[in-house]
Length: 131
Image (cartoon, rainbow, N blue to C red; front, side):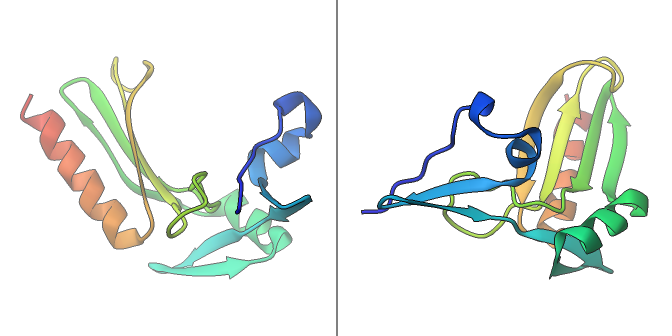
């Protein structure tokens, strides 16, 4: 039976906490480092160095709106945030912040595709626009 674990933060480096998912199969630990960039709206899996160079200058916003004092921001993450290790990679994220975008996070959704991220952003903008 496969088990998934995350090591305690003090046992792994800052880099690993940020970019590495750890899987435990029997007695072996395997690290999965997958990095993605956007080519237009298409995803491309790349090596770390290419990802880092792209990430420095890339425009990653899919949407960024302020609605009724809430900031709705949707971005391409470039790293899989599906920490359940089940299903497709989650590479896009919409977050809602209060206090004209300066407050705490109020809501988060993640998506696998550019199209899902666009649709999710529009839906959340509409949700907060109707409040």
